[in-house]
Amino acid sequence: MATETGHHINRVYIDQNGDLHLNSGKVFNDAEADISDDMENLEGLSEELALLAGVTASAAEINLIDGSIAGTAVASKALALGATKNVDTLLFNIGTPAGAGNSQGTGTAMTADTNFVTGADGTVGVVLPVAVTGRRVWLKNTVENQILKVYPAAGADINALGANVAISIPAGGIAMFLARSSTQWYASAVPDGITASATELNYIDGPTPGVATASKAAVLGASQNLDVLGLPVSGLKIGAAGAEVAVTATAANLNAIPTATGTGAEIDKATKPSEMATDGLGRMAVARFTFDMAVVGDRTVAAHGTGETLPINAVVIGGFFDVNTLFTSENANNGTIAIKVEGANDIQTAAAVSGAPYSSIGLKAIVPKSNTPESTGIKLTAAREITCTVGVSAMLTGKLTGFLNYVVSVASA
Image 1 (cartoon, helix red, strand yellow):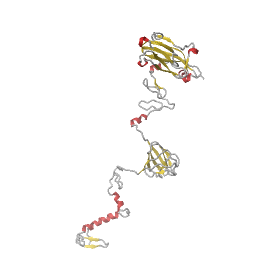
Image 2 (tube, rainbow, N blue to C red):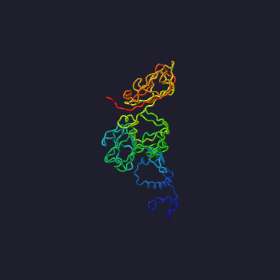
Image 3 (tube, helix red, strand yellow):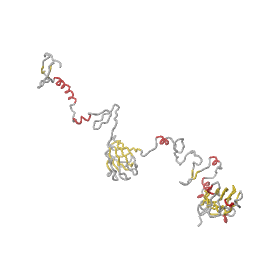
Image 4 (cartoon, one colour):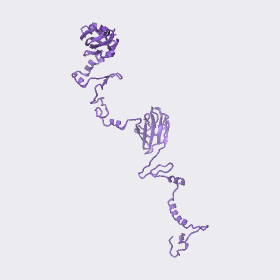
């Protein structure tokens, strides 16, 4: 220690302020042990004690910072942020409330920041805590097939639904609630169950409704329209669900059709059976069919459908068939062929292929005649398929193409 003016360097004395001076002397305790260094350490301790003036924390509370690591969350210790104000892991309190009631007053109160809610049935609900500006509450509806109602605390609002009005969380949905003020929550739904990749989701980024965009999803326009759609031959199918028929015509085939000058109603009148059965100007329809022994399955002794069906109340008023290739059968050509649409033999009576009309190529008459529809016409009582029936012996060769002219009437009482 420094000496004071007027005192010997080795003297021990107390100055006028009551301070003890050890001028190069030493202090011994009752056991004759030198405690001079300890006495000097008391000077530094007094300074440290001065720093704790006003501290009311207990030793246990102060020890909460003992073992803290900057940037690392340590269990049961105070959190010290890292150099970039970071922390490695931070867990929020979790709750598993069950939905209840059917109103704000009877719903289950949520107290946790992260909630896995059970029991949703489309009616029950939960209630958010009193909003504190900046608070966030996460919610997961754990029921995958029922919505969950979420109410604000009394007097508060979610989004712009109005005070005390619930928001519905979809089945299996996740939502985050952000408190804007003490009375305003905002809810942000998080998509759940989406398995599409980012690449797949990007297919919907950029398309214009009604305009086909390469490598993008097609979005229909306001009138369910799309400006351009490229399809391969047979890529377009028309018909009832599960019974669609592929359109096999090529673009050239379709372009070869003369330009239609009629209205949509006039075209429907000429092509749709339902429209053909109404009054007005229309066209006679023609059903074309083929029976070809190149199809092995059609050679057997049995009735073979041609795949062409006429509508109910159709009236066949004429036509013909064309033998393209001579028919032959087993057993010296004694096999027979009959053609029908409503009843047996009503288009062509069964005849052996050894004779007329199958023994020569060319055009052949049928039973219904265009000049006598009143007596030879055939009216269908149900939708019927044109059928060729092989009798007696199986066919070997032959092919015919048939044409039935018909109009559509209405049911008779």
